[in-house]
Image (tube, rainbow, N blue to C red; front, top):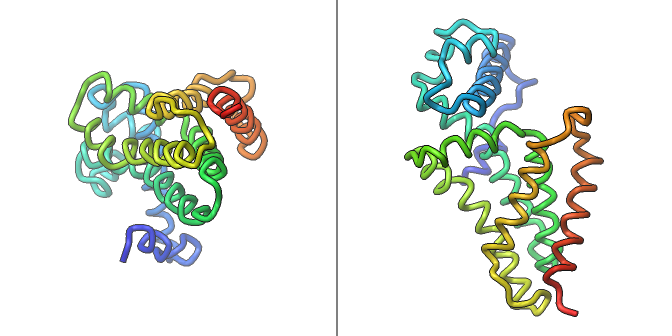
Length: 218
């Protein structure tokens, strides 16, 4: 059974007993609070008591669900990036019959929606990148590196199909991904929360248009 199948076959919250639903709510509140704390203060600066306060739960509950700060950090990453990785896999599978650039557009749309939903995640990863920690290497191996290679792979397919010029695909990929992340993290406060179906679609359309005008063949 694949990871995606396990995810899809997991019981939905509405089918869980009330006590289990309460536990699921508390666990999710802890993960969301941890994301904010790790993004703002980094791994070393984020404290378990502060995360508990942000989540409005008793500190022992964090140890009950996660056991350690390291495990909480990893599950916080998986809570958001794991969802994106599963969605990216589903998109790549569902669009397999389309032209490479159409597949790329669908994937970038998902990345835009992710960045809008999880703006703190970018800062959390940057904090680990600056510390050059084993945690950052783990994120690259299990999430960000895989997602990056999906974009590079679709660009490679487009180049082989003659749809784009012979350019440095890794540089194009990092430019596009960085643009998405910066747009939805360094964002005007007056426009928050971002309208996922409006703002993200408009930005993705504009980004894709600029990408094609820059690298498409004449």
